[in-house]
Image 1: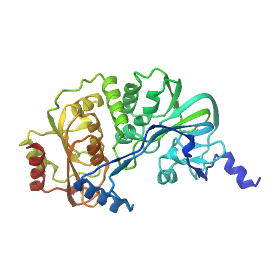
Image 2: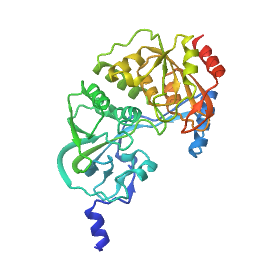
Image 3: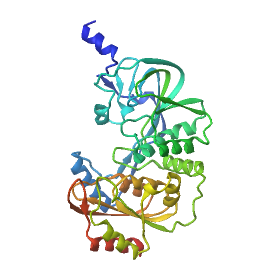
Image 4: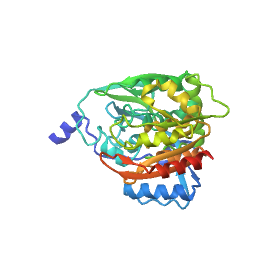
Length: 362
């Protein structure tokens, strides 16, 4: 063996990658086409234009299949959640997408750290850096992946990242409160665990999408509400404006002007950071109208049984996450494109804003 190979092996360098074969999968939810309307098609085409991807939505939106796949002697990288297979290649799907695999701290980088052998059965929702203190990714790229484990009572140990934010730990506790067959272990970022039996949990959403297959969506919503002891109202009635003026990017420069307009429609300004996470979930569960600039705050729309959504973007930065969530939840959805300023900030026409509010509240 060449000296280079010895050095790379010593530092657990992973260069090659492999994909899961169809025969290895156990499918829990089949992929499915979902029809989309003309206005959403227009938005998705703008997103494709900005992302550089050529996507055709003439047949609708294709939700991914939800599956598991079992492996022996797989090594998990605590700094990323990347999985190295026994044959030495990285499991592409453990990073969700090839693009994310290329950015993973565990791929094509020297990773000094000792390998610790672990016996037993394991699964993981470690997905770093994306799930690090990020509500959207923790819900949709993390906790939603637990759906297959909720359908199979085989005892298993779930691996989670160290340094979880309080809201992440609280959400995980809520989801696992009724799943006694799942135990939890934290993997330090400096360690690599060689697992006797590893069950890969697929990502049930696509990149830039908060659309979850309906069985997964319904299970996750109910698991969180039950775990947090939040009762779902028969008819949501609150109206909120999710404010972003305290954030550092994607602020609406004339947000206060829009808030003043929104008050005329009984829409109340809402600063999520002022409330414990359990209260945030309760607020969104009771909300029938959600207004605001694109941001992770809309992730909580998952917990509303029925709502209308008005999302605002800079015309230079359009994202599809919550438009797809609204489509999957059968919400009324409108969007507005604003004039860009600095640091991804933008302004929105107050006249267009009021017209959209009128359409959603009539």
